[in-house]
Every structure is written in structure tokens, then in C-alpha cells.
Image (cartoon, rainbow, N blue to C red; front, top):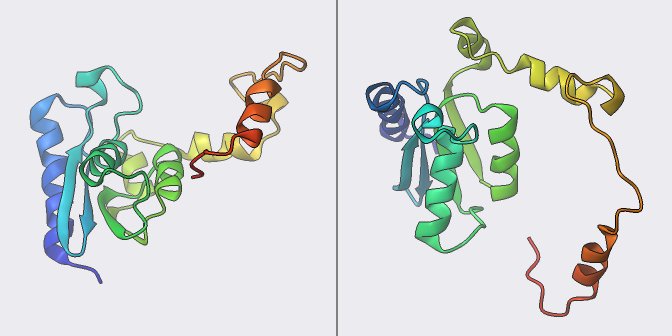
Length: 156
């Protein structure tokens, strides 16, 4: 159930991002049973890490706090509609609900336009701006075969 105080916590993180290193006005909190497990802001510029979006940072911290990659009992509050990368991480984390404030159109209006990524995903690999080439017979299949045969693997 939506809690405006938890959304405010995410928004507060977005404001902290601006004070910290001007990485972008984004913040997120991971919540379990109404309690904030982790809070993070965007830190792309300060960390020199293009994946250091608020949602990713909050997910990583929550996993460490909970000792699990499975966040299916958690909710995510984020100051903006997640980008495609963060959306993927949200699904891999299995959140039970995501609440967001600003939408992607509002983010695009201030220079954070992710539409080009959404558009790229719909294109065949041969038509994308960054070329993708499959290298066949590279031997990489061996790792998959070993994984498939592994008796003690932990599936995720």
C-alpha cells in the first residue's frame, strides 16, 4: 500500500544527489514491511559508473542488508519512472510493487531521455546504433553445459 512518507524519502534522496556530485536528480528507497531497508541516490558522475542509478544503488544495498538477491517481499519507491536498465534490475529483483513520481516524459524534458534505448530494443541487432555481433563456436557454450550439469547450483 502506497505510503507518501516513503515516496518523500525517495524524493529526498533525489535532492541529495544534487548536493553530492550533480549526478542527476534521482533517488530511490527499498522498503520491507513498511521500513526502509536501503536508500540511495544517483551517483553516476561521482563514482564514474554509468550503472550507478538510484534504483541500482538501492537494490545493491538492499541485497547486502538482507543477504539475498530475492527482493520479492520488498517494494521500491523511486523519484522517477525507471529507465530500461533499472527496469531490468527491478524485474530480476522480483519486487512486489514499484511506486514512482516523475515520469519518463518529464525526465526527457530535462535532458534524461531514455526513449532511444526503448527504440533500440525494438530493432533487430543489425539495425542498432551500437553493432552487436554473435561470435559462434567460441567455446562459450562449455560454461552453460557445466552449469546445466551442476547439482548444487542456486537458481535465480
